[in-house]
Length: 217
Image (cartoon, rainbow, N blue to C red; front, side):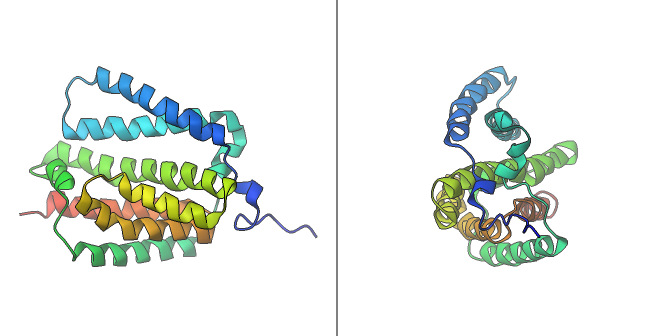
């Protein structure tokens, strides 16, 4: 009886070609420049929406030539409910612990401060759903997949986690998301799937943004 491929040991099943990364790195700034030029206003929320939307469109352009192999190359593979629950619980505990170490990052405060009504819901949608989806697909989907195929899982785990943290730019924010970056990277490595990290990341951000928007004094 044939043994089904195991994404943890089958290197080819997770290989993402270097030309996909190159296309993404070219497409993202080109699409982003056009989108930002077309923006009617430059509010924080609209800029964030344009940024994460640009990332998703550029990623789609980069993996489209892979056809039906694109989801697997990005780590979008089915996984049982237990890894998802484990990921959500672990993320919630880790995020709570990290939140006790410092104040809210300035960038997050600027986006969420004083929001009410429709704008609050839109912010929740952008930061709670769109941002985690884009970040997971770019860092632990595309970048991890390319690094794991080019070198190995350990290199992919370390470099994608560091890149994820560095992308948050603000020093306090980098320090606060670094533990989550390594946690998400480990989940991606251990499960061979991006599904647990996407779900956990979305729930974590939704809780954090909801608290900042609706519970702040």
